[in-house]
Structures are given as structure tokens and as C-alpha cells.
Image (cartoon, rainbow, N blue to C red):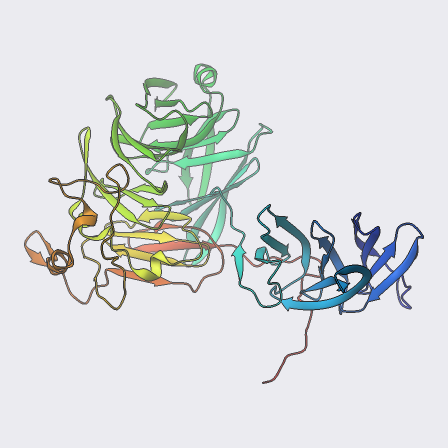
Length: 508
């Protein structure tokens, strides 16, 4: 079996699939042709010239009745097996095509279930995945998901330093007069990839964790450069054989090991000494660790959140359904929790006790509708330096909440659901026998106008909530310097032939 030859270059067959139910092979090649071949006779059955450029990928449904093709021209084409009088024939027709991608489509896949529903998934150079219905391919709804990283690899330090790590290397960048310069680079001798990096506030210590080891380094600024010296302690290496997360607070190091054990060390001049092992109360599998000034917040995969004071016992902070998504600690030493359904909670910590803050009681159940309806899930959250704002960001958006102001609750924004109730073992946190959800609209209106802090009314012109989506995919964001915020975007990347295929513009 041979495909058509091109006059200028060799023809390449980029993709082949089989249809065993029909006894067919389908091929897609560099001339833009989709060909159906008979397996028994090794002969060409049909050829389609639907594509304007190379066909890079093919897929078919389970019954072998629909075939989808895609490639350089950015279009997805559907071919259907023609039926006549209830009988199946071997004739195929070109049914529909859709243009949903902005660059080459490199792969297609179909997911089908016993209930008859099917999903067609496509992806390519633009680093986004498009999901659509197989049965409603021609005009059905679709969702485009931007591929973003699941684990952060950027540490933004308030003293104008940005640490980035990948594989076994860590690079430090310093911003000077609006530009950035590489000031240090270290490469780990360990073959394992780096899992986390932490730098203390004084920029004197840096901890680098991998799945097999945790290494400590001393940092010293010499001009714009940053010199790095390794701290060697064999006793410390014997205790810690790897970590999922590390955090440095002054000279204290908190380590979450790969075995879900939590240790607190003191980094001295010549040795690293163990202070204590922090034990959880109910959590066996730790999802995340957030370290404050004198306590640690631990979240489990079952929605339980515990607070462990230094040199104290763990106590249950709350159990959240749906599960906690992001956790950070504000400048006021309050714990901020963002749930999977974009609900922001604030807890005040007093010793081993934690209670819901006044702002959270008034506002957590009444999040702004634009925030709740965001398609891209939040990827990070941080508290602004010397401010009561908490910032949350996703792959293409950035927003803040002012924790000194109540979120306006009006009928127009429709962010209050009348008659809504929650089980008391869920997110309904009790206060004097009542839950947040039990507040009536009249009570909400009264609370909305009680914007008082230390007896002074807040400036009404200040925004309680703000959101923008004018960003390329965001890798990280955090406070930077005294009154600045830095946003690290993923740069535009280049691949051989990554320029999008030029399709004719339709004028309407």
C-alpha cells in the first residue's frame, strides 16, 4: 500500500489507526490526505482531501463508525460511516469540521462510557486541551483548558529576589532598576528532581528538597551577586532522607517528609539540631503544609485542617467539604483557606484555638459571582505585605479581596442563594448556635453596612474585590518589595514550525 507522492518532497505518513470492526486501516499523511484501506485486499477504499496541510493525528470511536482527523491546519474533521436502510455499508462521508485550536493539533483521543456519552479530547502546540462531545461534534458545547503546572517551581522573595528551579538546578534572579539579572545558580549532585525550595526572610539560609534528600545552604550578598555555601551535617542527613515540602522561618526549618512526618530543626552555625517532631491528630496523608510564625497548618486529603503550635499539640481547625484548595497565612497571623468551590475563609488563631474571623462570618458565604464562576481554577494565594489584601491568581487572571471591607450583597449580582442550607459537619461553621447559611437577607444587609474597623469607617471608594484577566499563563505571583507585587508569566515559546497555519479570513 502506497500513499500519493508529492512533486516537491517525500510524502510522510504521520498517523495510522485500525478499525477491526470494519476491516479497515486509516492513514493520515503530509499531503493532507486521509485514506481508508481494506485490510483483506490491501487496496485503497476511499481518499479524502479535506485538510489543507499535514494530517498529524487520527482517532476513532469504539464501534468504528466515526473517525476524527487533525493536524497542521488546526481543524478537526469528522468522517462517518454511511448507513442505508438500516444496513451498514463500507462507504464513508466527510461530515463536519471545527476550528477550535490556534496552532497545530498533535493528538486526539476519545473517551466513551457505558451510558453512551463520549468525549473527544484534542491538544497540540498551543498547550491547551479542547474537550467536546462526540455525538454533538458539529455544533455542541466545548471547553478549552489551558495546561498549567501542578506544582510551583518559583519562590518570590520580598527583597527583590526570585528563585526558580527545574530538574536539579536552582537559579536566583535579582531585579535592578526595572531589569533582572542572574545572581546565582546551584546544581544538585543528586539525580532526583527538586520538589521544593525555601529562603528565610533575612536571605541568609536556603533549603532545597528532593525526594531523597534535603540540603541547606548559607547565602551572602556581595554586591548584586549572591554567594552560596553548603552546610554539611551528617546527622541531619541521616534523619531526613527526602521531603515534599520545606519552610524556613529565621533559623528554624520545618520539613514535611515523603512519609508524611513533620520535623522542626534549628540551623546553627556549625550544626543542624532537631527541636521537635510535630504530630498530627487525625491526618494520616498530608496534602499541604503552611508554616506561620509560631504554628503550622496541615491539610489532609480528606478535608481535615489541623493547626500544630510549636511545642504544642495539634488541634482541629475545621473540616471542609468541598476540600481545601489553597492555604496561606496573612500578616495578621490569620489563616486564609480557599475551598474547591472558590469560597474564601479566614480563621483567627489564639494559642491552640482557632475561630472564624468577623470578616469571614459576614462574607464567606457571599463570594462575588465573577469569582465563583471562574472557569480556570485558582493556582496560588498570598497576603500582600503591610496590607489587609489577599491576592488569588489563576493561569490567566488575578484578583484581590480587601479583608477590611464587606463584599456588597445585592440582587443584581445574585451571589446569595435563598433558602440554602448545609449540613453542620460540612462548611457551616457554628457561631452561638447559628450557621453562616442561616442568616436572613435583612441580617446580611445590616452586616453589609457595618464596615467598621477600630471605630473608624473605611473609605467607601476603596474596592472590596477586584479581578482582571489580562495575563498570559501565570507561573507565580507574590508580594515584592515594600509596596509591589510581581507576576511571573510563562514566556512565549518557539518550536520548529510553531507558527500557526494561515487560514483564510472570513469577511461577514
